[in-house]
Amino acid sequence: MENCIFCKIIAGEIPATKMYEDDDMIIIRDIEPKAKNHFLCIPKTHFKLLADMTEKEAEQVKRCLKKIPELKELLQLENGYRLVINQGDDAGQTVFHLHIHILSGQKMGWQPA
Ligand code: AMP
Ligand code: ZN
Image (cartoon, rainbow, N blue to C red; front, side):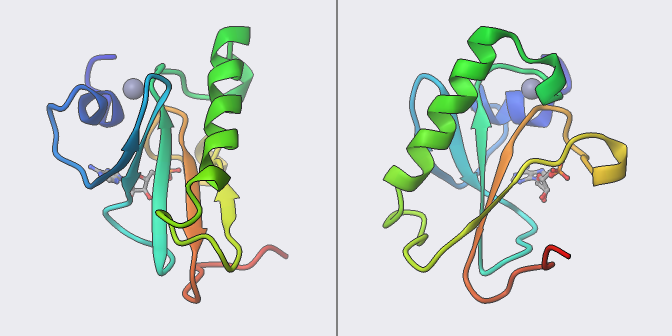
């Protein structure tokens, strides 16, 4: 998708600290970490919201969710972690390509109420 920063990272047009990549996803370090360890798991298909997802895209997101715990050493998830998917303006979504935040370590930016 034109002008999508995550599509450009996936295409290799913009640099990122890549932790993992396969046919479905790329996992990179967030450039503005909100926790000690902050990664983004980005499905390779461009869509904004879970509500927009096709069945095929939902399968890709499922593979992302399954892969994350498989990478627990690489992503330093051994002591627990949080997954966040911001959806829309009120959630503060700034990049309109669905992505899963992976947060771990002591310095969590916020606590659920
Ligand atoms: P969200 O608010 O859920 O849309 O989160 C977007 C996230 O993408 C933010 O945490 C940003 O710090 C992160 N981000 C934006 N641009 C880049 C980039 N070029 N490389 C890595 N992370 C980025
Ligand atoms: Zn995109």
